[in-house]
Amino acid sequence: MGRTCFIAACGGEDTTALTYHETSRRTGRKEFFVFIQPARPEHGDALRELFRRIVSSSRLGHPARFFEGIIDAMNALPGAGESDSHLVDSMILVVMRLGEEYYVLRNRRIEPVHYDASRGSEGAVEAIPGRREIPLERTGRQGELFATQAQDHFILERFAMPTGAHTILMTPSREFVQRFRGVLLDSILMPSFEVPSGGEIQLETNAAFPAIHWKSIGTGGPARQERKRGSDMIKRSAPIIAGAVALIAAVILIFNPFDSGRRTEPGEEILLGAGESEGEQVPAPAGTAPAAAMERPGERAEPMTAVAILGEGWRKKFNAPVTSSPAVCGDRVTFGCRDGNIYSFSTDGTMQWTYRAEEGVGASPLCVGGRVIGADYKGNVFCLDGGAGTLVWSFQGGEKIVSSPQAAGRQVIVCTMGGRVIALDAENGQRIWSQKIGESVWATPAVGGNFIVAASTDGSLVRLSRDGAVVWRIAPGGTIHSSPLCLEDEDLVIVGSGDSCLFGYSLKDGTLRWRFAAGSEIRSAPASSAGRIFVGTEAGDLVAVDLLGREAWRRNTGAAIRSRPLVVQGVVFVTSYNSKLSAFAVLDGSPLGDYRADSPLYSSPAFHHGRIYFGSNGGFLHAPSVTFAEG
Image (cartoon, rainbow, N blue to C red; front, side, top):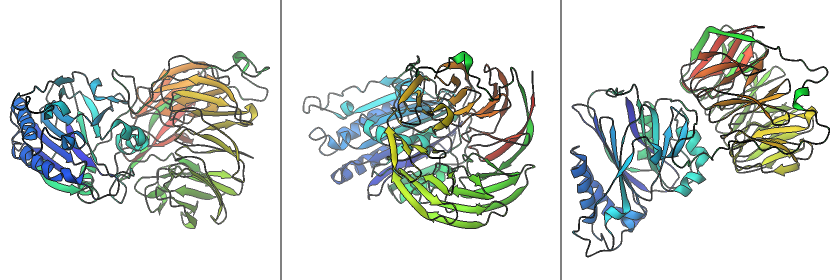
């Protein structure tokens, strides 16, 4: 069993968080953790005294006596019972681990979020199997003098650590969770916890918050520890920007990637919207062909049956997650890595060149006209010679980019986490125009002859002209991380949303054509082939719908799908958070086989010369072989 407690630093004010972490020297099966952040400066003296008393009693004794002592210490603080704002408004957390059992004392203002990585579910801590609240009885020693005691402001809960990989975030409030939902999911709960080069996770707030992570292997037996021998004792009063950063840096080295794949669990879901179980369809325009007549003249029909045999290939290891999707550039495979490099490999696994960016690269590169265009987390866009990897031009945008660049004639279109769509001259990288469309843009835009369709995380879907003017703007509902798909011949824009639906809109005027309830959030980008649309869900379903938004088939992969499906020769391939590349028949969804990777997968697959290429959150580029045959 590997575990860690860590502090996530946020914001930019000089606020102090007090932390203490102790592991038993003898057995290592006992652990103790304290986190206190005063809400206001005037609370500092009282809470520092409380911190001192808690730490001085941290000999990992019997939980009942230990936590009773903490409550007594709180009630003995100066001003206790007169004004309890130092206990109500501040963040106070005390954790004791005894073997595979956790005891957690927290004040009620803390909003805990439990992430079960084995199932990919995010929800309230009440959803943890076997969790129960231990009553904090009034002692009676102050009950007659004051209306409230510390017991009234705190919760003590106990639970056995479930098998699998889990994280509990202790956030300042429900509003905090909703406001920073995207960053919490993608910077902390995503199976590759990392911190930018500056050290802290930027949330534009002065709040800090702790998280508990564990990975328990096996059932019923003692948990296996993944730590070095000897004591591990940390005692500090850490400014958020300085001291907490050092603590995070140490934790990153032992924070293991873990699986995801959302399934509905008991308890209220906090980070993900509730799924829908039944489809809702808007009537199609008059004259639209029925589902049975999807094949069109001149359109290649998929084979009735197909066989895909996935075999061993090669893989390469890197020092950071490979979440960028590979791009096929001639006879080379090019991709970005969060270590800050763009890599180019030949199909036999020989590295051809690397280009060093200023920060990590999550965006997938664009290959066009013998050049490779990439973007990094610092907001730089760069054009490279595809043969040598040398720099041709660069553009400094100043806003983080995770969306992949797209080509639009002589323009390169990029979207930023600042909510902007920017057009650059493909020859020299000069900015042609910029249009703000929302709070931030995660999804890759869809580009065509006379249109650009982009989506923002605050729920806007926008069509722009090639000169950057807004043609139409709509709000499907919920956040949008799914990259839109445009089918010009069908007058369709298809996009998934955070309210668990897949939408079909008119490309021409943005009117709703149909709405399909997928059952859980969609962050996957849809793909299309032979009159069908394929998209993944957070529940791990790969869903095929027709062009009228009607379900053709559905198959569950066992974990969340955040990649774009790949369709090749009658087979649809998809990567998922359970570390698998899965293959299904396009016609009926029949499972054709799996390839097991090293860790959860975010990268979308690409096909070239008999291999499927994709990256992993564990830092590998995988290239398994694939053989096709008609059944």
